[in-house]
Length: 440
Image (tube, rainbow, N blue to C red; front, top):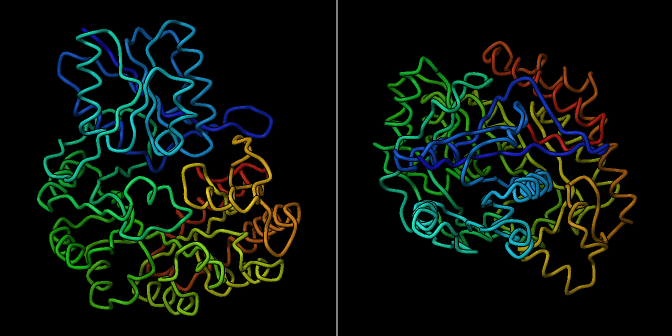
């Protein structure tokens, strides 16, 4: 029987050691879904390197490696090692998809974007010829009919009681910095609600009462979200997801989201500078509404997680300090910060290259924690220093306590905010080592 070995690499610390942790709280869906799509006569092996060790002695015929953020450089090293051993190596994921020319130098094949059509073709090619096409690029037009993910390949690992379910893919917005916009170009697809419910019920049958609803922007279709929430509510489960702050504009929908069991949501707050957002083609997000939006969502009983970028064309050293004040005043329990980074393949990269604003094309420096371009109102060194200073301030013990255990929502959502407290401590450990805190 042929065998495929899926590997999700971890990332390197600054001293080139591997980032490791004891448990994984938010495992991805891609490998359980691909495993479910794998013909029954194929064997499947899976390693999540942040909590496991890569089996370089595997007897697999194909090595399938994911590419997520800065872990892509570890992915490349893993690929080299397996190719030395004569293995056929394929890479997928959003980094490989938007940096195809770079990724293809290191592997036998790259799957771009959606894998539902490309993955079966790849396995069939291997069985028929023993070889793979250099590139598989077959976008899908529908998410209908996806198989039930093989959750068993996650439940036998060290994960913490939350499994992923996909509702939609893509986003109708086309922000210049966004990898999703590169891949989907404004397309947003949703799964049939009965199929989403099938997956949630499968998780519940395993004795797990929490799930993470994977969707790049689930409020893109308010009516779909409302119908989904009406269907989820009777299941009596708790869940988290991510979407835009536009959710706060729909009080009736927000109420339904909370009633359906949503306890925590992640929002792309991005910046407190409207000039900066406008320059990134995110004019639809209005910074004047940030405070009220977060207040409205919090009042509804949902714990807020946020992602923000520093270094937009509207940013100054003063605005970065004000960003810290914003987090303090809104008491966002789980904030995350990144330096604006023009990733290859995005329109932002092309714009900065044309404007001669790129300081380097050494992509190993494109971590989101080192400035790799010429900022508009400060030096690259000043921006990088301000980034770390902000992180040190926000992830101080006092700030963590103020935003989590002393949060006004604590009596209503004690378990979620206790979880947020430990997430902050986890991030703090990474920040103190100058590692981007994007693994949990």
